[in-house]
Length: 117
Image 1 (cartoon, rainbow, N blue to C red):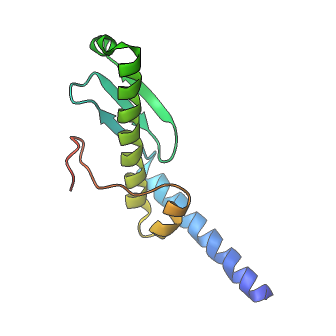
Image 2: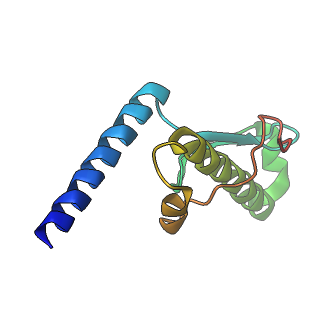
């Protein structure tokens, strides 16, 4: 039993090291999304809250509820993009099912204009 525990601990250390090396090479992993008119732009991290929200003066014409809904919609898209980029960055290091089990689901691959690849 002790050998099994030691093997599992060694595997965890190896994966941690591989993930750390990969993230060091890629830099911060974020997703960016904008509304079609560019009035709202959000930058998010995988599985996390928005890191940056930019609202143009024109977006204020949406009213509070409309603007809030638009920010939430764009933030969700930015988060999905960040999640997908994390999956792409770690695809050879971590089993995608493990990331999904932590709540970081891989979305469809999209380019910066929202086109699916």
